Length: 226
Image (cartoon, rainbow, N blue to C red; front, side, top):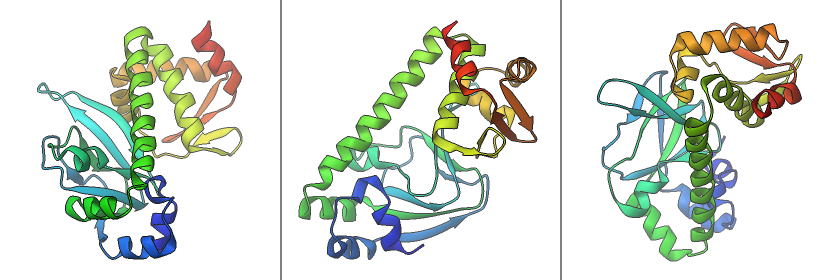
């Protein structure tokens, strides 16, 4: 994938012309990371935006007691780290690679220069930030009002929508361990394992190694609405 192709499929810059994208592409810096590499920690200087060319990146928080909470995943065509570019404050969360990953960074000074030259980028920024805020609101609501069983079911529905592919059902196209899923629903791995077993026994999902296949999407929704 060329830098120009990457910029075209990134929501943040989708409204730019090819000439504008060409100028922006010159300021991108390519980075390749092995799985499990932390791209930045929480409270690190927020001096760059990242665009994902390939692979996946997990956004997370780590408490003082060592408990990890997953906030989001980002794959090819997604961007992350945009909030710190706008306010210049330290990172609000950390970012770690889930697999072999290639990203392109755009330094804050270069980003602001392009923003001043092309103010309509601001509309795309608002769209991205609005989507992030809605996701965070839904996530907070689930943590506050749903029990672990419903939180797991709700998160599987969300992942099926974002990463689902047809494969004897809807396979969540993520190499996702039960421990990683547990960090997303803020529960122990043992409790998540128990919930997945119940959902499997009810014929709603199938477990295939690290893959989860949704067999009955409507049935899974009804589990939350019961």
